[in-house]
Image 1 (tube, protein in one colour):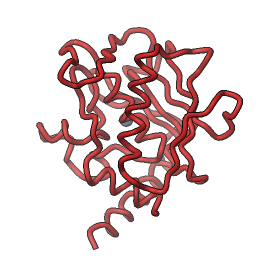
Image 2 (cartoon, rainbow, N blue to C red):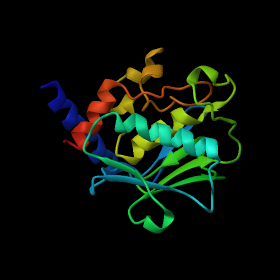
Image 3 (tube, protein in one colour):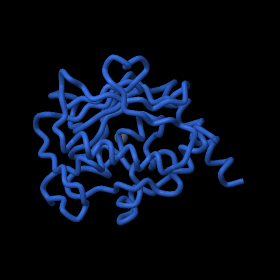
Length: 202
Ligand SMILES: [Zn+2]
């Protein structure tokens, strides 16, 4: 019953965003992520490739791959796969690129995930315990943006006020401010994993 209601709520949220949102919007706060084209991946594939024009460092690529693993662990029917640029049809283009979109530090759409190459001090530590208090957690941000690319909205919209009550913020990867400065949440909550299974049922 609860799952059913949750699922309908997500569908409603996605529909509402598709209907009402401009092509992009900037989140409030001192820094944040930006999202547009929030949509389910209708082909059931989350294929991605690393940009050659706007390349990620080796560490960033590895953190991104680990972030993909966190969503694989949701055990949905969605197929995650890293592909080459020559297999890019329908795939997400992962870029490290200077951009200017309000105060966003990264953003995602169905076909792009972009991390800001200027103005953000990233920490690419593998372990959350090593993240600097003055830098942004790249891996946590990657988990968050991949969540958008596979069709998830922000947790505070989908599940009420979860994101406004600390320390709950640290337990939900889709909070708008989950990955700003210092270590963010890198593990999708059980509800966020359930949301992915609802979008891509086995
Ligand atoms: Zn976001």
